[in-house]
Length: 190
Image (cartoon, rainbow, N blue to C red; front, top):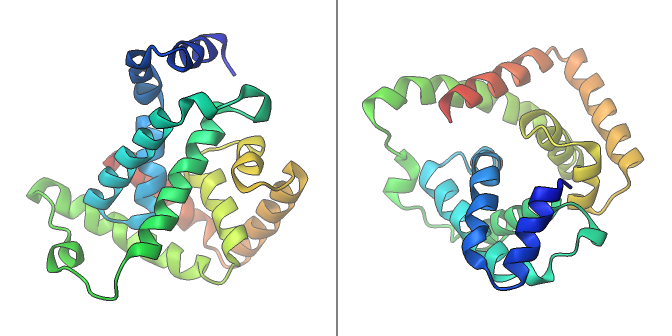
């Protein structure tokens, strides 16, 4: 963990919560992208990102650098927010949620992204949820094996092995290029 980040966290833990904005600015885009990939819905991703940062702010005193990196702690909060979101959803769907209407400029780019992501998502359903999540965190979110292991509570070696096996399956199915293309398109949209 960088010394600057650790100093900001310590100031927040000492009651200077206004310094949390520096952490927010550093991690907002990464956390938003992480959540968006799991929801594919802009408004839900915005809401869940806000909730994740609010929970982090509320619980900043509980964070301990001895237990892991701040980024891993924040991703765990975001991941749990997404899990809670899906647990709380009813079988009923709101028409606005189904259509997720975008501005005219975003519609074409979103359509391309969604088409690419649907193909990747369909293929990734063949993996168990743990392996799928490791692949997404490593490729899409660019997290290190250490961060992934801290988020999931698994060993780094286990995460590496799962990722390598998953990539081998993707290569065999010629889906790796499509996954990378989806990442590149997604980074242009956000």
